[in-house]
Length: 213
Image 1 (cartoon, rainbow, N blue to C red):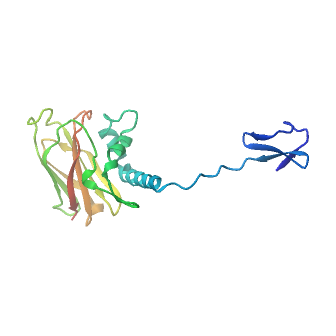
Image 2: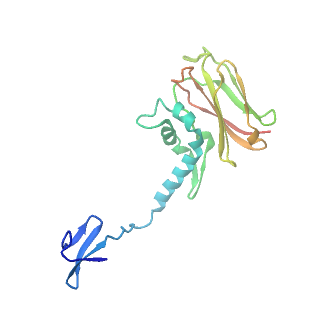
Image 3: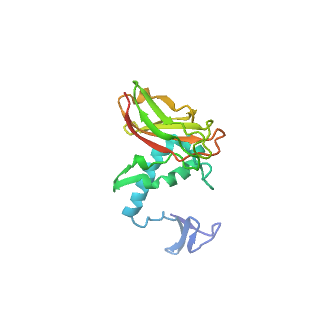
């Protein structure tokens, strides 16, 4: 606290920016304005929203490069990653504070391109994950042999993703993914399809949980 005796401002009363002026024992006094006190603690509902936000953000963050592309067309005024977060809010389940991700409800892409048929994932070789599907080129409108399949795998224990944006052409029907870091662990698996120019994408498909050999 300081006193003012015909100072630069002279005496003043009340608030001025971060200063507060008053009179004490006949002298003009200036002191700093105390920080605002927080009006109460966050409500339980607010804490739940924050917990869910953090959970989904940490889950999707490693996929930012893929999501920025796979949600690009539907992301208006925001990044593809932010759009992906918005689309996946309903994939959070559980009771406060023990929220978890409902993996089958997760979407890594959303779009109008037809996906492949009969998708599946399995581990038949140590440290590898094999995706297979039925080529449906020409059987559905806009399904072309040049379309490119993307694949992704997530391990909860390590909180880590591995993905390949350009895995194989639609008409290939198979792709083997190297996952030595996930050997002996379960992974959640997904796949989807881009057009060759990457302007259009399919809804992604959840292909189940697979134990990597």
